[in-house]
Image (cartoon, rainbow, N blue to C red; front, side, top):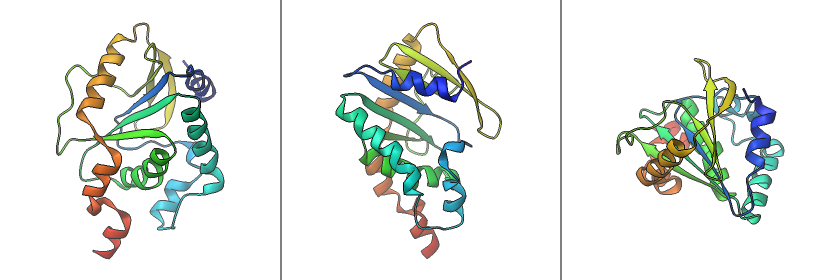
Length: 184
C-alpha cells in the first residue's frame, strides 16, 4: 500500500508530455494537506492560506510548463455539502487557473458512465493506475497499484466525456457560491 509520500512520488514521476488524471467520487476528503483551510472556509474567512497553497499552484504551473497534463473529474451530488463548495471555491477555482484542468460530473444533469471502478483513482501517463483507499469519513488510508491500467484508462475517457469544464459549471451555479448563499 502506498503512503502519501509514495503516492506523491508516483504522481511526480509523470513523464514530460504525459498526464496525471484524478477521479474524485467521495463527498468529502479529510486531508492534512489543506492546512486547516476547510475549517477556515466553514468559519467564513475570505480565502485559503496562500502561503501554503502557493506551493501547490507553483507545482501545477511547473508541471504544465513541463508538458504534463494534470486533469481531474469531480463527482457532484446536489445538494452540495460544505466540503464540496469548499473544494470548488478554494480548490478547483485556483487549481484550474494554475493548470489542473478540472471537470464536474453533476449527477443532477448527467449520469455516471457504465463500468466505472467503485473507488477513487489516479492514472499516471495512461499506464499506471493507483486505486485509492479512504475510511468512512474520507481520511486517506493508502493506495494500491492496479495490475491492469486498461479499465482505468477507459473510465478516465468516459468520465472526461461525461463531465463539464469546471468554470462553465461553476458560472451556471451561483447558488453554490458562498457569497450568494450568505446573501440569500
